Amino acid sequence: MYQALQQSFDVAFGGQPTFVWWSLGGGVLVALCAFVAAWLVMRRARSIETLVAQRTAELAQINEKLAEEICDHLNTEHALDKERESLRAVLNNLHESILVLDTSGHLRIANGAARRLFRQINGIELERLDGSAAEFFALGDTLLPGDALPHARALRGENVRDYDLSVRTAAAGVLTLRINGQPLYTSDGRQHGAVIVVRDITESKKIERLKSEFVATVSHELRTPITSIRGSLGLVAAGASGQLSDKTQRLVEIALRNSNRLALLINDLLDIEKAESGKMRFDLERNSLLALVEQAIEANSSYAESFGVRYVLAATDVDADVFVDAHRLLQVMANLLSNAAKFSPRDVAVEVSVLNRADKIRVSVRDHGPGIPPEFRDRIFEKFSQADSSDARSRSGTGLGLAICKAIVEQLGGKIGFDSEVGVGTTFYFELSAVVVDETRDTRRETRPEPEVTRR
Image (cartoon, rainbow, N blue to C red; front, side):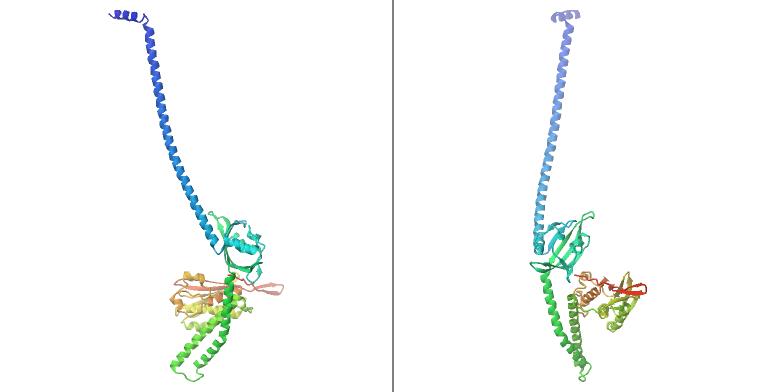
C-alpha cells in the first residue's frame, strides 16, 4: 500500500519529490524570516515611539520649568528694579550727602544732595573727591592736607565720626560740614571702598553761635546782681542785720542756697561758652600732678562729708610733672570728686588714683554708686545731660560739669573717659602727658607736649 501511495505521489508531482520538499521548506523559512524581521522592526518602532514620547514628555517638563524660571527671573528683576528705584528715591531725598568710593577714590554712588553740594563747592561735577580744587580747613582755620581729609582716612581703614571742617566757596562763602565715614568690606574681609556721609551744618552752627552769645550775654548781666544778692544774704544769715527769728532764718538760708546754685549755673554757662568759643584762658605752668590731686582732695573733703563720704588716695605709682593750668585742673578734679560723692552710698570711700600709663599719666576717680545706665553713656559728656532716673534727678547739678571737664582736659592736650557697671560703680579718668626731660652735656631741656585738639 505504501508503495502504491508513493507511486501515486510521484506521478502527481512529476516524479521529483526532493525538489518539492526543498521548495516548501525554503518558502516557509523565508516567510518565517520575513515575519521575524517584521516583528523586530515593529518592536523597534514601538520602542522608539516610547522613547520619543518619554523624551517629549521630559522636554515638555524642562520647557515648563524653564518657563517658570524665566518668569521668576523676570519677577526678580522687576522687584530689583523697584528696589533700586526706591533706594534711588530715598538717597536723592536725603538731606545728607551720601558718597560711595572705590579703593582708588573714584565715585561709585553719589546722591542728589552730594552732587548739589560739590557743585556748590567746585562749580563742576567730580569724579574723585581728591580732585577737588577747594581747600578744606579744620575748625580754627588749620588747612587740612589731602591725606588728612575724612574720605582719605576712611579709605585707609579708619572710622571717622562727627568730624567738623570748613570749606571756602566762591558762591556760598564759608560752609561748615560735619562728616562721617567708614570703610566698606566684602564678605571675605577685603576692603573695597568707603562710604562718606556729609551734612551741611552751616546754619545750625550760626544758630548755635547766636544762642551761645545770648546765653553768655545774659550770664554776664546776671553775674553782678547775683553776686550782690549772695553777699547780702550771707551777711543777713550771719546776723549782720541783727538776730533773726527761726522762720526768717530758714527762709534766708533757703534763699542763700538757691542763689549759690544760680551763681554756680551762671559760672558753668560762662565756662562752657568760653570753652566752645576757644576763649577760655589757660596759664600753663609746670606742676606736680600728684600734688594737685592731693590739693583737690583736701579742698573738696568737706563737700564729701556732707554726703557721708570720704576721699582716699588709693593708689599711685608716679609723681611726674605736667604742663597745666593749675586752676583749671583743680576745676576738673572738683567736678569729678563732687559727682562721685553725690552718687556714692554713705560711709563708702571714693578712691582716687594716679597711675603711669606708658607716656601718659592717668588720674582716676572711682565711686561705688549705681553706675551709668547704658542708654545714657553716649551722652554723658554732652551739655545739660543727666541720667533720666529718679536717683540721678534727686542730685543737684547743672548738667554742665562733665562737658566742662571734657573741654578743659582736651584743651590741656589730654583725653577723658569713664568705665561703668550698673549696680557696681563708675570710674571717671583723664590722661595727661608727662613733662619730657632731655639731659645732654649738662643741658636740661623741658619739652611741653603738644595739645591734642579734638573736634566734634
